[in-house]
Amino acid sequence: MRQRGVVIFTGYLWLYAAIWLMATYSMASAQAPTEAVVYVDRALLAYEAQQYEQALHELQEALRLDPDNLEALYYQGLVYVALGRLPDAQAIWERALTLHPNDLDIAYQLGTLYFGQRQYDQAAPLLQQVYAAEPRRLNLGYYLGFLAYREKQYRRALEYLRANVPSDENYAQLTRFYAGLALGALGLPHEARAEIEEALQLQPLSPLTIPAQRFGEALTRAAERERRFRGELRVGLFYDSNVPVVPNASSDLVAVILRQDQKRRGSEGELGALTLAYTWLKTLDWEGTVSYRFLQTYNNRLPNFNVQDHTPTLGITYRGLLRDMPYFARLQLAYDFITLGDRKFTQRWILNPSLSLYEDAGNLTTLVVGLQVKDFFDDHNLAAEEVRDGINYSVGPVHFLLFEEGRHYIKTGYQFDYDATEGDNWRYAGHHFLFGAQYTLPWGGVRLRYDLDFHLRFHTHRHSLLPVTAPGTVHRRDREAIHLFSIAKDVEWRAQPLTIALEYLIDDNYSNLDAYDYDRQVVTTSLTWRF
Image (cartoon, rainbow, N blue to C red; front, side, top):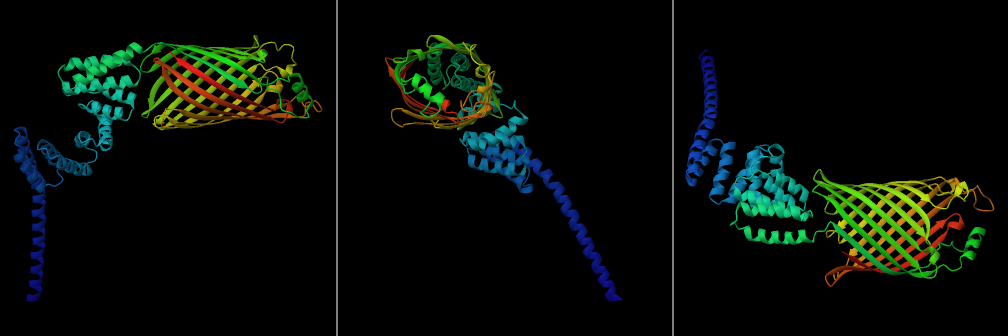
């Protein structure tokens, strides 16, 4: 019995000891944060009195009692910054952000610290996190605007800068200065100059004054040079191996007759082209232009095939941002009037909506939609099946891979087109496959370019006239490949911008109806003056 009583008594002692230890731990846990807050409050008083070593000591005591205390971590980082111990501040804030990833104050302080140390890739996501929740936080728009400008996202930079709330005149001046830089990069020198003038007025004697004045002078010259009216004149010589587009040699009766009627096929010649454009609207978001293009070719040996083309165009463009990606939405309306051998040949009304998206500095995608209403003159004597009047519909994307800011590129694209002509013999569904590449030589700025337009045309009706031995039995199928090789170089002559170019074009059209099967080659050398 004694032994049993001793065991029971010992068990009660252990139970009381466990309860006492748990109570002691709970009291310590409840008191530690309270004591930590006291140390944080003392640290704040020392910090405000600029007694940074004393403040650091108080904060270290607070963190000894409560290692995860957010306030202590936050203010310890500030104290380290005040003492010039930036690596320590970075380390303590990184630890705080790991413990409290959604705390905006920690994210902002660490982001600005990264920014000040030029660790821009680390600063950007933190500052954007804060901007998403508090876009009006002091100087946040400036930091993000600077980062966007550095990445050449000028429209995004301007949005950030215009939303900035500066803490003092220094940040106000910096905001205006970089807004001017962004506007200048966007091609708006008048608006950019106004921002620079505002920046100079804020602090006439600041370190930014001299560079801002110089930039303002450059903007003044750019504004003076900026012309709403511009033009381009091109003159050249060419040789065309098949001006009348005579079919290749074959046993087909129609092809034989066409070749006999047009024995002379090649001709040298001259060309001239003039383009005039006027910008009637230009803002940050909108740009409107009206233009006129004139083209004249003269074939020395075959003047009946001289081409004259008149094309007035009205266009408007809207610029915007889609998830930080710049885009351009364009709408163009044009009228095209062509004569052949001084006689009216055709007229077209053309509507071209398009949307271009810059995914990044190396990728540009454009979606083009086309609508052409075609009217050929002097076709009233033709059989109904041969009338080419109608509407052409087209749609498809073109993508550019850009290198070195567009000095080099690779182009790929596809377009579907449908030619809804009145005459069944010309109605088709087509597929355009596009490829191109440009390389700019490292010396002299010489541009080498190649373009391929591969067009498959599947005519929807059997041809009513061909082949003559069995009319109405064959669907015409064409496979046309147009190759263009070009060498060009920009030069200046008496301060005038000129471009010298040499082009070689190969047009190879294969058709299952021999009358439409032909080859053509054109070599052109030209000089272009832009004014």
